[in-house]
Image (cartoon, rainbow, N blue to C red; front, side, top):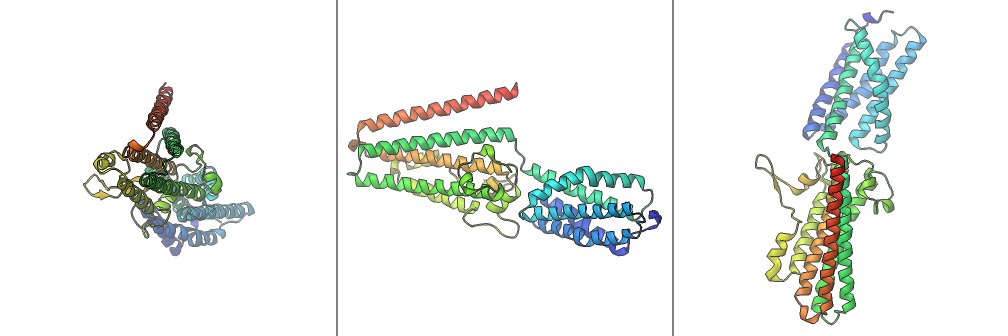
Amino acid sequence: MNLDGIKPSKILRILIWLVIIPSLIGDIFKVLHYPGSSLLMMFGTFIFAFFYLPLFAIESWKSKETRPSKISLIIQIIVLFIFAIGFLFKIQHWEGAGLFVIITNYLLSFLVMPFALYHLIKSGKINLIKTHNILLIIFFFSHTISALMNSGSGKIKIETALQQGINTEEAFRAASSRNKQLYTTLNTIKIKENTALLSKVNQLKKITDYSITHIKDLKSYLLVTIDKIPKSEADTLSSLYIVNSVNTDLTTTILIGNEYHTNTDKYSAYKLKSVINCFRDSLLKLVQEQNRVIIKEGLNLSTDNYVGYEGEPISWEMTNFNFMPLLHVFNTLTNIQYEIKNAEYQVLTDIINSDNTDLNTALFSQIADLNSKFDAVKKQEEITQLRSENKKGM
């Protein structure tokens, strides 16, 4: 039977537009972060997988006279169905989407696209096969471009981000060690007799530990959800070993929400902002009144809105976490932990200075020693970073 004589049915031509139009519009909306993008792409993909492909198979089956051609058609339909379902899983962030993406990327690159291009070039008339191949090219090209552009929307330089993450983690550990030593020194000197001082120190440690633990749990939840690793491993994992480091969709869904629902639960950026604000406000109440303004200005824990290009306000949550890669989000959270530890140290030294007559002078020597050690660590990190940058430059 001559394939050139077979034309697509009216229903098939309608389905073609029902696939292409929502898919293209959805891709554009996705790139521009407009609401409704996921729904449009999901609709186009659903029509393609469950309506277009079955009807195409039925209409083209009658043109297949040989067994190899029928087998080829069946394989083609199966491959396309797998790709469509995989894309649907990816849009909806369902479990198993990563496996679908890996399989379909190989099938698309080495089987489907070469097949479609070959028949498009070979066919001379507008027939069923050529119409189908044109749809394939548009459909796959649009989704491929969308994937590339969406990965670029939160694009980061991996090597630079990894180095920044390592430096931030080292700084956080150094700050934590410094503060811990200072608390140990206070316990050694025995300040139990000074109940007012002891109350402030305990309160400071309590609010700091709560804030640090909340961010630690948030980081672990992101890794458990996105990288699919056990919580015990996620609690101690460095940014260097994050697998899905450029994932932007799931980080945004967890921290921000989507176009239909803003996330405000325990693991949202909204809740994180509340924890930071509560920590900062509680912290400043422990500071001597004459030093409150100075210490407040020195804290890097502002959650104020940012100003957009046209002067419009952009929330702190959206600026820091909306469509940001997992690695960037992880580094941002670690940096907040570091700034919390710095703030703790500033307030702790202020509390000590507020009642220095009752404390052993050795304590102030210890504080000076800790500052020197911390500055040395920071200086070494800066040297290491400069050497790394120089090496890359060479």
